Structure formats: structure tokens, C-alpha cells
Image (spheres, helix red, strand yellow):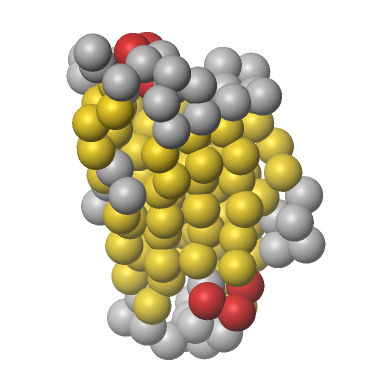
Length: 119
């Protein structure tokens, strides 16, 4: 059984920083793309950033230059470094990964971690 578990959310003041982590566990043969999405209250879930297994990064325009995605393939973990945070970044952040468990290849989601940007 494959699981993704996020951590690192919290309350931060505008202009502050956070680092989110998402670790995959279970029977994992390989992980392809990994990414982060977020969902603010009353809004649809939106894509934030993705990273390929080879390390190519992609960002939504709203976070480009402020957020950085990275991954540690040895640890099956993806990170999201959030800098220069704004109140509009307040949301539940979810990680996503394409994982081959041997039985099937599927997209898995974490349970989400709350990020609140407020003074």
C-alpha cells in the first residue's frame, strides 16, 4: 500500500517562509513526476509546481520566483520551499506523485497540510 504523507505546514507572517515535505512509503518500484497542488477555502484545487524524476522543475505563474520544488529520489520525498509568502498563498497544500507499486501505476495524493499566511 502506497501512502504520501505531507508535513511542514503552519502559520506564518506575510513575507515569511516555510518548507513542506512529502514522503512516499510502501511498496514502490519507481516514482515519476511529483508535484504540489493547493486549495484555498471556497476555491478549486490548483496546480502549484511539479518536478520530473530527472529534476526538471515547473511552476505556476503565481508562485514563480517565490517557491522552489525539489526532490530526494533516495528518500522518495518531494519538498516545496515557500518564500515571500502572501496572504493569497493561504490554502491546504497537497502533494501528488505518479508511482509504480509493482501491481499498478497510479497517481497518489497526500492528505494535505494547512498553510496560513497572516499577520
